[in-house]
Image (cartoon, rainbow, N blue to C red; front, top):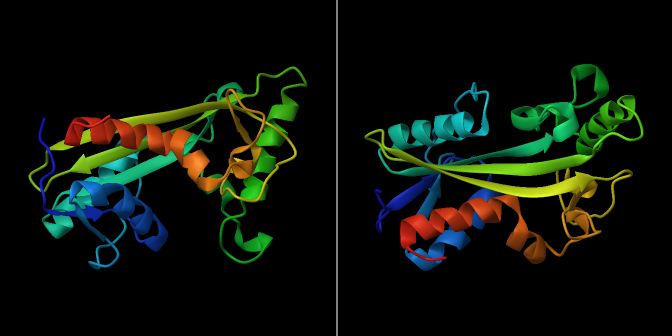
Length: 209
C-alpha cells in the first residue's frame, strides 16, 4: 500500500473550516495541507451514486489539478426504512428552492422531510439509521485508497441540541440518549463516522491505531 510522505497534501474542499479541521488531524504526522480552493481549483460535479464514487471524483480532480496527492471526503445520512435515503443526496435534501426564500441549505427542513416520510410509513416504522463517511486519497498518477467510516443510531423528533450541524439534532448514536447536537464537539468527534474513517486512514498510512 502506497503511503503519504512529508509532501504537501491537497484537501479537496473550498471550506476553510474543513481545511482547518483536517489539517489539525494530520499535523502530528508532518503533513502540510492546502485547500483546493486556495489553489484555484474548480469543484468537480459530484455525479457518483455512492459515497465512494463522489469522494474519489473530488480527490482525483484535486490530485490531477494540483499535481499533488489529495484527500476528499463524502458523507451523509442513510435511513434504513427509506432504503438508505437520503444517502449521497443528504445535502441536496436541505437545498432551498427559489420559491422557498434565499438560496442555501435549511437543515431543519431536511430533517422534517425525513421525519415526514417516516410518519407516512406508520408509527411502528423502524427508525434505525447511520451516518456514513468515505475518505478518499488520490495521487496524480491515478493510484487511490478509500477509507469508510460509520456511526450507527436512530432518529428522534423533534430535533434537540444546538452544538451540531446538518442532521445532528435528530440523530441519537447507539448507546446514548443524546443527539449528536447535544454532545460536546470533542466528544462527538471521538465517535463520529468521520473519526471512524480517519482512524482507518491513520492506521494504514501511518501505522498507528
